[in-house]
Length: 473
Image 1 (cartoon, rainbow, N blue to C red):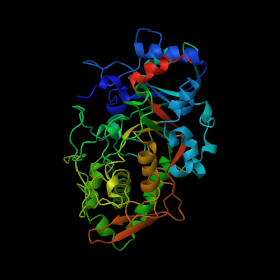
Image 2 (cartoon, rainbow, N blue to C red):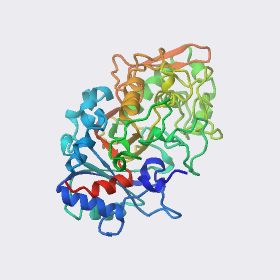
Image 3 (tube, rainbow, N blue to C red):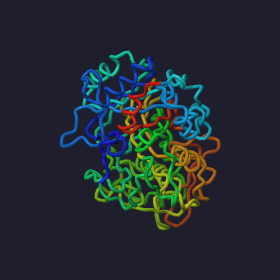
Image 4 (cartoon, one colour):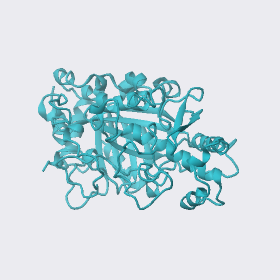
């Protein structure tokens, strides 16, 4: 069995029982003091510094969890040897702002529009993440983390999970994560996908690419068991999304093939599931469109298993995409993870899998039946982490090739992801598949998600944190 105690706890297992999360965006104020801070955080002997939470917390989970990620600039600020720094991949060295075009961070998402502190990426050295049961615990851990004058707080982002694991667009989330070879996790059940080799997420382990492993920065204690994280602050236009569902449902009502999308009378069941009163065909079509855009009904039911109606009895994680699947080729979850379905780059079917962890920020949205026109809405979004052994081959390739170009399937090439893609209403489109084999093309999708900040970080193992804390040069 793999030794989880050398990993940070937010890499493979996560903290489902900690609904509140706070990200501290930090600059190293003093190299020597910061090293001592790291040494104290790993030893656990200094109660004035939060202890790094490992992947093996024994029989009882801690009440709060604390983890860190270091940017390239942060590793350099700590005095990491130049020979070691040069062994990190180019995309990590360049940083997330330099990779903006590949990620679709253009227009409203361009780095020059990002607010502080993300407008000064060279100053972002370390991102500390606090997971807790309530806000008071977040405050307590933050005070301890900043009590040594080792780090300067540049900014802070905070979020919390909603009841039922729902996110701002109304979908149920956190349904599945990759399962890894050699890792026993009783909370994660089989989903029909192959077990991922540890090298999918950890440096120094075999990957599913024959004969290929990602380079491990040396010395071994620095790079081995480390991984990379794309931290993203993603603003979500919830009002715009709901308004688009209105528009698309109205367009479908007058379409000659609408009965193939929603059989007559089907609106009663759909409205019953989503507790829509009074039931109407327009309201039901809104939910149908939402389901097709995502690839899941908003209650989490995958279209691959139940395309006509939501079904609470199906296994929401265990499915695949075969030729008979009615999940759209361009649906969000199918673009992110094609599973075993036929795609152009067959070797990439299971090689771009990522550990995805996210938490909403901003208040939950409640649709006003009288209309949202003229209302000033607070910012809402997702604080997302996309963890894998290769930022370039996993996160960036998925973002560019699959989400924003549709290169995995000729039927969607030239379109962007309908929910997270860099869309323009003048050119965007999305095809709804019909039982007859045809499609109905929706047009005019705006950009629902825009980037408000981010950083590429290295999530070091506990051995690496100990090594960094012992540097003297």
